[in-house]
Amino acid sequence: MEARSVLFDLLKKEEILWRQKSCVQWMSDGDRCTKFFFLSTLARKRGIYIKYIKDDNGCIYIKYIKDDNGFWLNNRLDIANALIAKFREIFSSQPVTCLTNLSNLQLPKMDIGLLNEFLAIPSHEDIPKVMSAMNQNKALGPDGMSGIFFKTYWETVKNDVIYVVQDFFVSGSLLPKLNESNIVLIPKVESLSTLNDFCLISLYNTIYKIISKILADYIQPVCP
Image 1 (cartoon, rainbow, N blue to C red):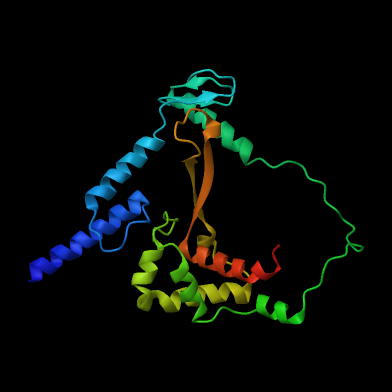
Image 2: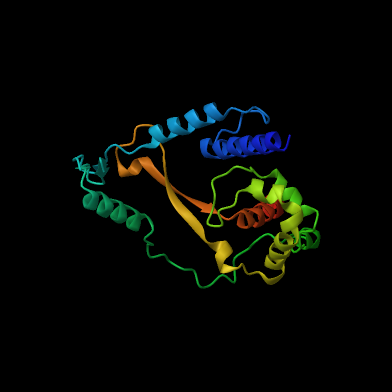
């Protein structure tokens, strides 16, 4: 019986692993579809594999990828330089005009009741409720832990999580490590060929996501 229990536990962990890797969220819980999840993961990898890339001028160079000039690139150094140049351009800031005299700017005022809600510290009940409502199998941030980890081991980690979240709302500052993110490329189309076929997303830590969700709920009443 003990060996069977260990086997079932390992099978369940394997199922969760492939469920997270496949990003399939619509399968009902309890179905041990390890083969399905495995094949789904392989299919997704094939779909986002970069065969080549052109630059903006349409000329060929990754095994393979186009740069912003439309050129196809297949040399590793050329591909690396094209990607660096592309995203350096994206992350470069442009000069902006700053308004210095705002004394005559008319802004709507917030009533005291709503202001108090904005200044409220999330309670011990609010924080786990927000966390439970989040998708548990999203891609991992720098902490390497998905929402399912916090949900499964909540009794162990709850005091630390609640303390960190509440401390942010009290102090107005966030621990530097919690503010880190993994920036990754994701495809915008199935057949990738140019640098413009990619977009960047940031993968944040779970606690950062909890704080963001609470803040979003706070400002929702005043958002158009």
